[in-house]
Length: 109
Image (tube, rainbow, N blue to C red; front, side, top):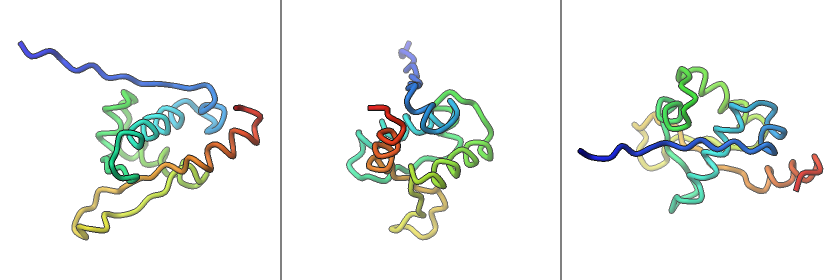
């Protein structure tokens, strides 16, 4: 029997403070981790994948709502696939500089 790969969800208090809620914080932390393990700065994930992999188990529409919130705050950038125009999966890039600046403004190191 093949062992089941277990998921991990990390929640950091400073990201909850920064984003204003734990769901946004979990999504941001997950994308930050993906970004560190990616050869490219852009992360390509469907909303369904994000929901499952973060264990938030929300609808795709809800995941997109939280992603838009992070984009509007400047913590994420979003783009369509530049190589394959037919690909409708959005790509996300974490703005680590903006996150650090905002944490500093909040007095969180």
